[in-house]
Length: 139
Image 1 (cartoon, rainbow, N blue to C red):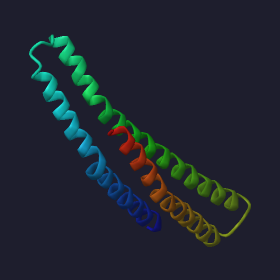
Image 2: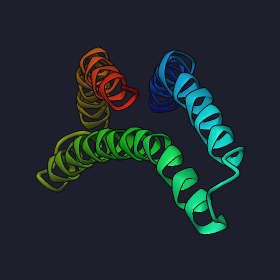
Image 3: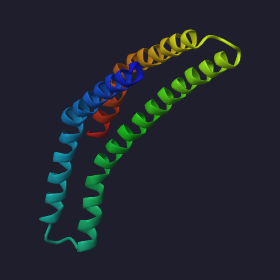
């Protein structure tokens, strides 16, 4: 039960961060991408191949931005998963060593809570770093 609440808490904060990145950075980049693409489509002297290449160049920053966000989120999820795996291993070792179930349950909950808290504290720095990277891409 506690673990589910913690998962929902992390998911809510991460979702909020992604929406903020989309609203403040990626949507602006998408707008520029469409303007850029439209400008090349109106170029009457360009061949279809040239227009296609130009449109691909216009799309590149958005693709890079989406790849950056995806990569950072995957790293975050991997780190959180490793932390929770550590907690589970620690609990299993305690049970194997003969510790009482109630004690192990409390130990596991404490460890999981620490994982969540530590990773929640990483989100503001991760957000700032991504916003800086996205801002430099959008220029």
